[in-house]
Length: 72
Image (cartoon, rainbow, N blue to C red; front, side, top):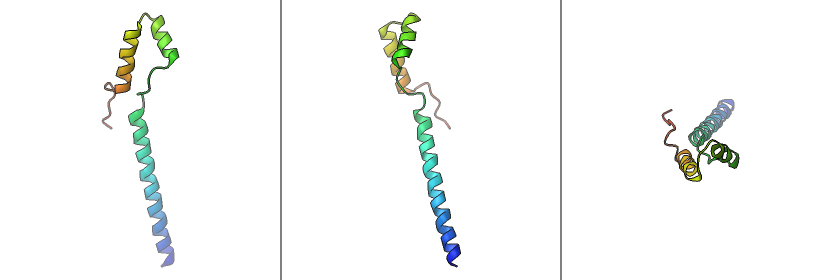
């Protein structure tokens, strides 16, 4: 009887831990790709012929993440 109770507690703890890890993983996926451009990336874009205004537009699009498909 006691072993069944301990087993139930362990199963409950493992289930809670699994749900928390799934939540953390989904949050990480939602944030993926939304980091602003680094200075090195901005330099690459400048060398490719983009001006500062274009780079800021690109940076804003990345931060907004409208191009990402979040249907998972």
